[in-house]
Length: 154
Figure 1 (cartoon, rainbow, N blue to C red):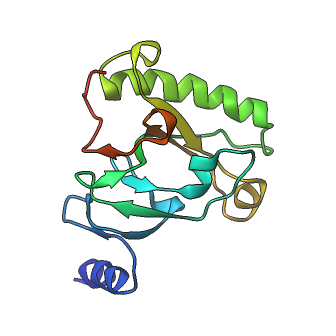
Figure 2 (figure 1 turned 180 degrees about the vertical axis):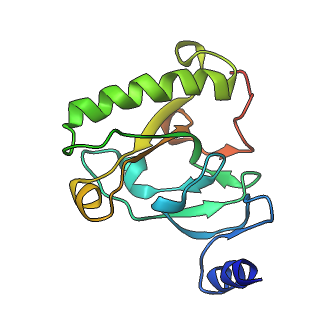
């Protein structure tokens, strides 16, 4: 009951709403810490990809609507000191690339789609104990997507 109220309240306040299976059923703002595999969304900062942008909120939509990104895998970085950018990039390649092949149904090299990822900032690492990296799919050259890319095979 409380979770249903929270979801309805989130939707009323402009937040994305999820159905009983956890899928986005109504668009709205979504905290990046709550992105789950299968979520579809827009993120203007990630689309620009001009360096170390920090994003706290994305605009989530049901996957059958137009969107720019789809979360397809996540993993946790090991405990310890905040890693270098190169270490995060290497971990993302090690995790996101094989998961890409499995999610799409074709190898990254043979696919027309690209990937990016969200990773912890130094601040979220230190103050929120954030270790989660979320791998996200995108269409080439900023095209929009409609429908999930899971198993699309291209």
